Image 1 (cartoon, rainbow, N blue to C red):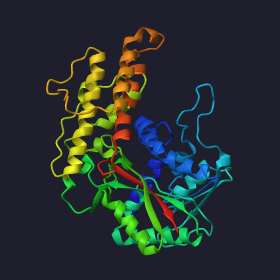
Image 2 (cartoon, helix red, strand yellow):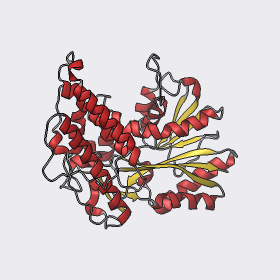
Image 3 (cartoon, one colour):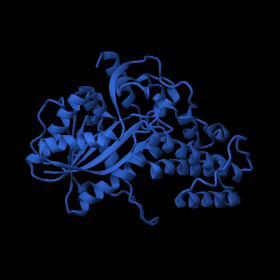
Image 4 (cartoon, rainbow, N blue to C red):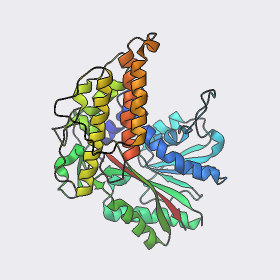
Length: 397
């Protein structure tokens, strides 16, 4: 990792919470989808009577601790002030490992005074792990995609050996780049180990290419196979695609110049006093070069996205694009039907929101944003058809 890349990465991750790094898509969409999946894993740990013991591999600024600590209760009562699943009593310790001293400095500054948090500068592929048991081996920000197959195999066996040494089960969260993201559709026919552009670290001014590994469904068999060779059992607990149409390279056009700047437009759904260009958000992409199951998945998700936008536009008396037609043969999930009906009730009751500055920008569009997000959350199949593929394994010694 050269100096320019390191400097840009550190500056990028050290931005304040209200910045391009922590835009509404990051906080209300990407993080929330992850947290909804992590909730099931975390609840299984605490329901067993254990406290969380987390080893964060490639922790960077310690954002994984923030993600886990801020998981919301699934159905928190509105009269309660607190709505988070965990409190500090549910955490026994969090240990973050990273090779970058400057990143760890940011983490240490952010969590100073929190006695549950410790960090260590190390190469988590080659250096020894702390001699203590963990029940969650965590990763976020695609650190495992930096490894080729041989090194990733070594890393997995090292993790499994550590789990086995304490004779206790643990969860492993594997966070990697998706093989079939539309962001790099031009590379779908290329080998899965190829250049990845970190241009968003430097607002596109300095394009710093690095080689990274991109994964599809084969990830799960790869992990299970390495577990068997290490003498442990790894079972797939959950898998999901994240950032299907709103990954950061959707807007940079670094790989695919034919995409709309959808992340910017979706952010507009959440910004107050800013109306998003709804008609520009319809998509008529084609998915040549994808395996059949990936292509079918994309076509279904694209249709549900467009159908949701068309329904929302009808509530505002806006016509959908002429080329879009509702397909009666396509089954709309019941949850989406219910959500769209609720959105219609919001539109009919707009007089109730006269106290707001702009009903469309402040009430209607954020609700539409959550509906579009929930299509991704509820329909994901874990195919690597998104910016990020995340798989969670339950590992038994």
